[in-house]
Length: 69
Image 1 (tube, rainbow, N blue to C red):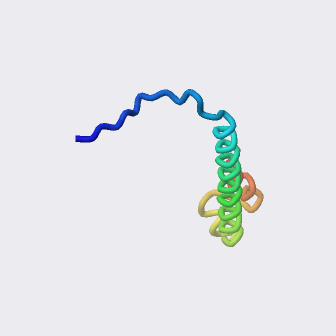
Image 2: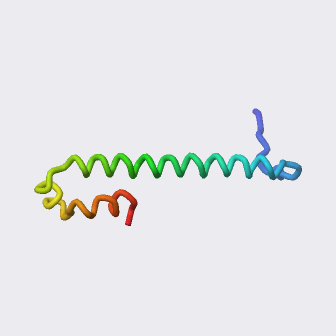
């Protein structure tokens, strides 16, 4: 039977590696949020005024909805 020790400490790990990983994670999250807002904005912009009214929006609300406000 094999055992895997998961209680080892992370002493000696370079803190810079975590900062680099955090930077790229934040950059990817920013890109994903921007793309989600872009897709939402384009989809809502493609609706007619009647369709927007059916869901309780007007054209002026599109940017607010896309940006999560």
